[in-house]
Each structure stands twice: as C-alpha cells, then as structure tokens.
Length: 430
Image 1 (cartoon, rainbow, N blue to C red):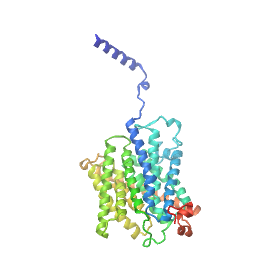
Image 2: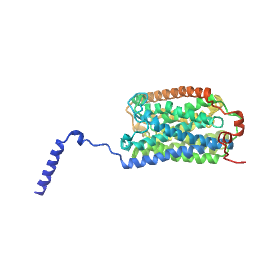
Image 3: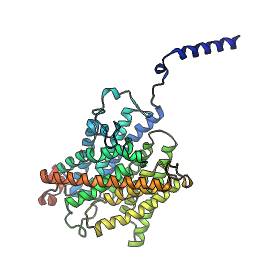
Image 4: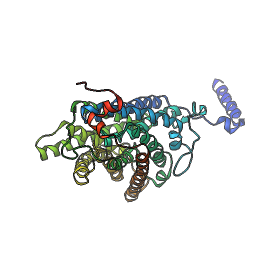
C-alpha cells in the first residue's frame, strides 16, 4: 500500500506537470559554481600578466632612464582598454550575429545582463575575463616602440586599435563570426592576441623609426633580473590565460595548463641550446625569451592538443622565434625593440598552423570536424585575414596619429630619458 501510494503521487505530479505550459517547464540556464570560481581565478591571473608581469618584463630590458615610461604605458593601456571594453568593446566582440562585427546591444553592460548566463558562467564573470585579454593584447605592442614614442600617441593608438583591430578579430574567431564559421580554431589567442599584436607591432616600429644606435650600438638591458621576474609572472599568469579559455573547470582546462607548461619548458631549453651552440654561453635573457616564445606558440592550440603537441610546439616555437629575431633586426633592419613580432607574432602564427596537425587524436589531440588538409586551410585563412587586417588598420591609425598628434618624442627627450621628460619622475635617481 505504501508503494502504491507513492506511485499514485508520482503519477499525479506528472499529470500536473503535463498540464503546465512548456515555457513554465523549461529550465532557466544556471551558472556553475566550480566554473565560476575557476574563471574568477583565471581572470586575476591574466590581469597579473600585464600588471605587473609584462610591465616588469619589458622594463628590465630598457635603459634605466626609460623604465617608468614603459611601466606607465602598461598602466595607461590597462586603464584605457578596460573602460573601452565596458563602453563598447565587449559588445562589438560578443554580441549580435554579424559575420564581421558585433553590435552595441551590450554597450555599458546593461543591467539586464547582471543575472544573465554565458555558457555556465554569470555573464559579468565572462565579461571581465575577456576584459583582461583586451588589456594585455595592446600592451604587448609596447615592446615594439619603447624608448622613443609619445605617451599621448600610445593612448590614441592603443584605444583606437582595440576597437578597430582587436574587437573585430575577437568577433570573427570567438564571437561566432566569419572565421568561426569557416572552422578556424584558436583556443586562447594565437590569432586574436598574438598575431594581431605581432603584425601591428612590426609595422608600427617601422613607421616610428629606430632607436639611436640601432642595430649595433644599443645599451644593454639595465636589469635582466627584473625581466626574469616579469617572465615568471607571465608564465604563472598564462595558466589562467590558456586554462581559463576552457571557460570551465574541466579536463580541457587541465590539459591546456599541462601542455602550456610543457611548451614553455621545451622552448626555453631549445632557445638556450641554440645560444650555447652559437655563442658559447646560454643567457638568462635568452632563456626567458624562449620561454615566452613557447607560451605564445602553444596558446592557440592549448585546448586542442595533447602533451606530444605541447612538446613539439614548444621546440618549434623556441627555434623558429630565435631565428625570427635575427631576421627582423639583422635582415629587415626593423627596430621591433623587444621582439614583439618575432616572439608573439611568429609564435602565435606558428602555433595556429601546427594545431591543424596536432589536433589529430592519433597525436593526442581532441580531433576536428575537418580533415587535416581542410583544417590547415582554415588556419591559413585565419592567419592571412588577421595579419592583413592588422597591418592595414595599423598603417591608417599610425599615419593619422603621426599627422595630428605625432608619434615620436623630440631628440632632447630621448637624451634626457622618457621617465623625466614625459612623466617628471625617475626610477633610479642619480
């Protein structure tokens, strides 16, 4: 009788539910607590990459009279990019169903989005996680123009570049735009972050002009130890950068972190080995530069490949980026001062292409809906479109700023140092 009564109650409940409107029975998407906690942590890690990681990494490589100027550029970009992301950057990247650009529906993050869910995350969490990517990407370009650019030009260029280059490319790849529709894969930013920043850095450095003494008579880095500390912060932060791009606390996030670490180590060893063979000594600057090259190379593939892919991409990134530095500075004679294109641009592009091979399950990857040849074609398409758009937009922006505000500081400012001439402070008082 007890069992019969329970069955009757279940049947009655089912009957009541069957009479309710379908909309009332539909489940409202809910945020997952574990995913939310992980992405909040990853958000802090990615911001940590710029402030203070990238700022210290770059500042250690310049002359002591220009240290604060580099840090100030990172601070200024972080603040400006965050506000622009709120105003319209996020909306342009992640709203609407256009193939090429989003719309303004999410500008100023309207109150209606406060309780909305993006995947398994509260949308405010997804918003601020993506904001940290929007912060670090234009900040990467700082390395191309240190020690000779106006601070006002940095702000004008970085703000416009974020909206004209970064937001559209993010929409193409991550916002459901045209490249995503073609099957182009980019897990954490080989195209969206590294290819855009690298290509733009190369052209901007060329248009800005060389530092005094380039290429043979430049001052050595004033504080390699500071650079090592910054690189270590970037390495740790990259766990959030790549692992967080799974936008969930799951096995894919764990594997992304595993291959990220593997690639970084392999690239550092590879770069140091090449230096040891060519110059007789492995340098600390070389080791950490190789480390960053490996991290950039694995970024687009990190959630798609396995440990074999991480190892091979790390070795490839260390070797290819090492020779790219020589090509840019010695053959092309372009003063991309801290090797943004050779390390980030070349690394990101290389990883974007190689993931078409190492995504294969036979090599430990997760597999693709496309054949290897078709996937490689989609990756080449993504690289070509991203690089061309970045170069065209950068040329127009740099030319416009050069004609109006000006790009390069005065010669007397170069002599005095940008810390004092532009900001009225010294990092190292005499």
